[in-house]
Image 1 (cartoon, helix red, strand yellow):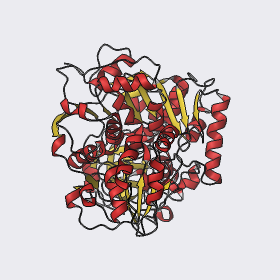
Image 2 (cartoon, rainbow over the protein chains, first blue to last red; image 1 turned 180 degrees about the vertical axis):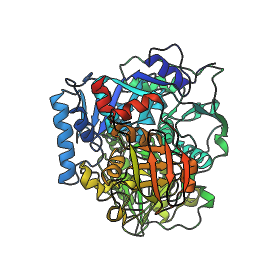
Image 3 (cartoon, rainbow over the protein chains, first blue to last red; image 1 turned 30 degrees about the horizontal axis):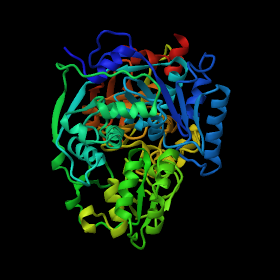
Amino acid sequence: MGMTMTQKILADHAGLEEVKAGQLIEAKLDLVLGNDVTSPVAIGEIKKMKVDGVFDKDKIALVCDHFTPNKDIKSAQLCKCTREFAQENDITHFYDTGEVGIEHALLPEKGLVVAGDVIIGADSHTCTYGALGAFSTGVGSTDMAAGMATGEAWFKVPSAIKFILTGIPAKWVSGKDVILHIIGMIGVDGALYKSMEFCGDGIKNLSMDDRFAMTNMAIEAGAKNGIFPVDELTEEYMKEHSEREYVVYEADEDAEYDETYTIDLSALKPTVAFPHLPENTRTIDQVGDVKIDQVVIGSCTNGRIEDLRIAADVLRGKKIAKGVRTIIIPATQAIYLQALKEGLFEIFVEAGAAVSTPTCGPCLGGHMGILAEGERAVATTNRNFVGRMGHPESEVYLASPAVAAVSAVTGKISGPEELG
Amino acid sequence: MIGGITMKALGKVFKYGDNVDTDVIIPARYLNVPDAAELAKHCMEDIDADFAKNVNKGDIIVANKNFGCGSSREHAPIAIKESGISCVIAETFARIFYRNAINIGLPIIECVEASKGIEAGDEVEIDFDSGMIYNKTKNTNFQGQAFPPFMQKIIEAEGLINYINNK
């Protein structure tokens, strides 16, 4: 029996010829990631271990992106703990305010993750790097500590669901709409413990930023990882961003999948997930009249340059509706600088939006845009759970940058055709 | 057996539905302090405001499917464990929560029948050696799913760090 793409990567990292779904393995890690919320807990755990430092100072990334620039004294303490650990262990890839970006946009951009890697991160959206053809998955702080100490982690080899993508998406349909459509179809536990393997001719019509947005939200379907095959676009991206050698894996032709779905990208419409689960999706023509108080464009899902360009295309020469606070957050400093050079900030500020330094901030209800009781936000983020962006009685509607930007102008959830 | 002692749990049940996410188990606004006692004060606060006040040592959480979905924050099982909960029973667990619970030594059991057959306030006893769940209020029994031997070893070592230290 053949192996899926994920299984082949895991087999090689476990030193095995073959692995099967359900098998427990110990695999070598190419990178271990933590942020300012999860690293301090991991640092507490690694100090309990009988080890002398970390397994490889070049294969650990510590990224202070969640509550930064420090939102209060307590979060400053978290960053201090992380910073001191990075210094004590001479960690090569430590990112602090001024250099930091949102981890899952930053690591691919810095070339720290490439095809064929096995990566664990103490952040659930670590699954993002599957867009590059890597196996990457979220873990907790204790797993992160063990990974930093030993360079290995245990995994149960996942089975997989195959998504065959065909067709060309319509102008305003992005990777975010594709993944929201899929989560709406299979549910928030539709891929529980499994890999989501994307393939098919339609992939060539998805940009790297589209693919990052899709694998980023694999966890929102409960998946262990999401993964794309490596094509010319992926190789181009890796050559531009990384000096590391990458390994291209392909699923065997006779690989076994639990389920197979075929999705015609040309048939998809802009899609919105209603509170309080990412599976509560409606196409834009079905949303009805939902007035909003805030728009957030950013996050590890949709804070990349293409997302900002789309938002700028919509907002150019327009004014944001009175009573709507719009916050735009480039995901990394490089994206920030690129947007600045392209004149996007001028468009945003003239439209009446606030532009922030990179931070996870409002996505998880940290800072930089917390909602009050009864308020509603359209956000390009990834979760709309109860209280996710602030008050437990507030609401988050997940959407693409295009829908978020149009909604900022109209003051209610709206699709691009409404701007005329 | 954990640490040579037969492990049992006995307590009253807090019952929740599908997809209890880690944002409601411990909201991000409290994640700026990684202290277990501080986290426990706010456990479940956004879906059950009185949980921290009403929970007693040994009590049990029973939920439906996909318990612990969302964020990887280990603060979630830490908050539950510190609040005194002795076991979480659910139809299914989100995978990161599942790993985290085992890694920190919070007992969890997957059991569809128990999840359906136990209500809030029921008194429940669990025998971790056999995986048997006894609903003492309704006088019914359920067989929970056993852990694979590898995970059992981590649980016996009282968490992943000890397991690695002992290797």
